Amino acid sequence: MAKFRLKRFKGKIIGITGSIGKSSTKDAVYTILNTQFKVKRTKKNMNSDFGLCLTILDIESGFSSATKWSWFLLKGLFNCMMKDHNEILLLEFGVDKPGDMDFLASVVKPDMVVFTGVSPVHMAEGQFSSLEEIFNEKHKLVEAMREHGVAILNVDNDLLEGLSKKRGRKSTVTYGKDREADFWASQIHQDLEGLRFVLHYDHRHYDVHANLIGEFQVFVLMPAIICGSLLGMTIENMILAIEKYTLPPGRMSIIPAINEATILDSTYNASPEAVREALQTLAKIAVNKRKIAVLGSMNELGKHTQIMHEMIGEIVPKCADMLITVGDDAMIIAEKAKEKGMEERNVFSFKTSLEAAGFLADKIKKNDVILVKGSQNNVRLERFVKALMAEPEKAKDLLVRQEPAWTTKL
Image 1: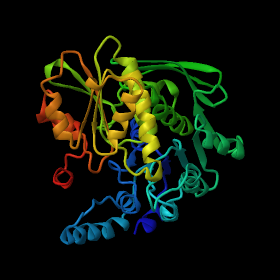
Image 2 (image 1 turned 180 degrees about the vertical axis):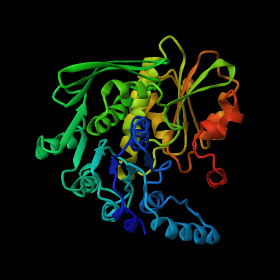
Image 3 (image 1 turned 45 degrees about the horizontal axis):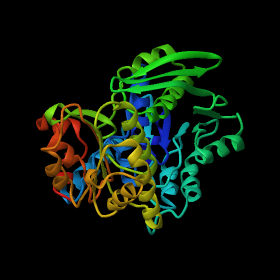
Image 4 (image 1 turned 90 degrees about the vertical axis):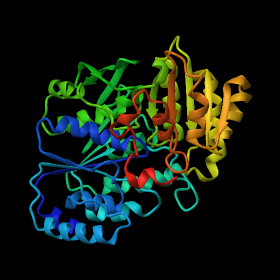
């Protein structure tokens, strides 16, 4: 049904793939393009085989309800007969194991593909065995583009830099901090007031400000600007749109905590590279404040679990004054942090998010900055945030995974 509907779609299709930052990048692209075009995008993280088709057909998931699925599929059958009048179809492509992209690329042939990077995720048994295998799977989306399709590549990533050199200048636009990139960023400054940087393109430079936390958000905003530029938008208008952009829940959101402290909520998910970036952000923006890192286990790392958690533990003492870990694997972070000089009296480990929240509740001080980051399943650090946020009644709007299907599971 999705294929049938796409055959009559006359607009442009933009695909977003990569190991991290897909949803944030998708929403940044939407924020910019939606000021000038009618855009339909993947809802939340519906980026799998089911989610992709549901987005195209404008229907929801029935989860475990046969009745809901019957209704939604009937609605999908009706919708596939109806023309989609959007000008842009903005889709997120997620893969968990080799072969997943084959199906997704058989359904959709994009006009543009944003490739955000490759990092160690989904590397448990039955998933990917190496970064090269992850790259090869996600690269299939670039190969599946329509004729004259454009690949938008983050060349600060070694594997994507290699791909850009292989493709050459034809139908490829690059971005990063490297001056050789088509769009590159310099003078990046970050504090609790937001992110500022200078964007360089075509021998001109532009001052950009966004209400975002984390220098890595530069890599979210630049591909969005590139997409708009390829569609004829002016950079000046796109910069104005960026100032209105807000992150989806759980992606380094600023949330007021009890006792006039501040939570950096990054509870959506966690990979080694993303945790490292988050810790570095904590260190930079919380100067002269007590820095507390609350880190959950990083799932789906397979044989790399031990070394990746140890890698995070090594950098924690340089970035935080107190460490709280949640989950069995996260205890590796705690042990390594102590080994690297963090005082034992400042390191604590717990099995669950609520146990950790109960411990910290009466120890939070005014002006503390608390970074909260961990994987989804069996960690669920959004529960920690909800327990300590100043206005828990706003949790439904501000936190990830507040739907009944999530709140009732581990």
